[in-house]
Length: 292
Image (tube, rainbow, N blue to C red; front, side, top):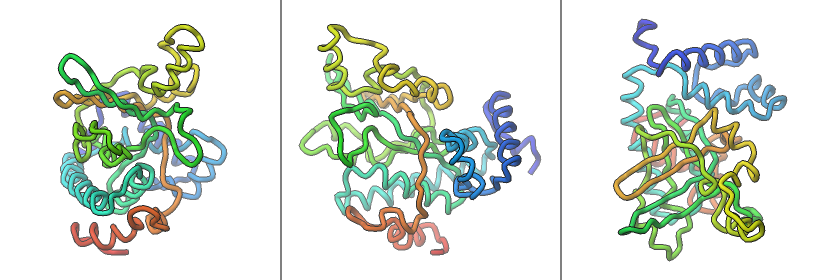
């Protein structure tokens, strides 16, 4: 395939960043030929020196060239894979597992040769009810969560999909009827880039506590409590998805990736089942793959 046909980036800025990243990886001796090269020993060594280095993988995934054929395959595979995972979430009533599922799906896509990257961050969900707007928040800054509970949310970018979120409806909603507004999963190619707001990044309880203490609402509270948000948002901007009366605002706050192979994702199976079971029993036969 010719270079002109193969290259399908969004403009010279993407081309320039891709070229710079390619040169950087080549200088470090990192093999970028297949998805999941964040496991490359040279990549891991550099990550030990640079705590932000995993971000370069996300930038590579989002700026690399794609063909029309590749996009077509992703559009066929990702919805089918999402249906398989949702089937497991429903069957096992597997709730609050965005970290395990994001790592699992990312590793599965890597094996299938589909480029993807994972983010941790905040999610604001708003739904219009008459003249009122109800909202729910998965905020990265939430002092009310502690112990072994991680704040915020996790999701994937799988170009051409800007947002792939398979677990939103399967968080621990309990008796909260807000869940009925949510789709089984979120696959969004068309999104609007937005600026993160304090209410996107900081939980309502924390914002209320600061407002009471300081006697005012601070529209810039997120910059005070999570100062790296501004830097990260310049690299990976926030996305808004509008679907009828529902609005979702995804605000990335960090790049993430599973630090174990697919065989070890959710290996204990405290909830659901190990990832490798879903791969072998569901994914391999559905896509006609090798079980290795």
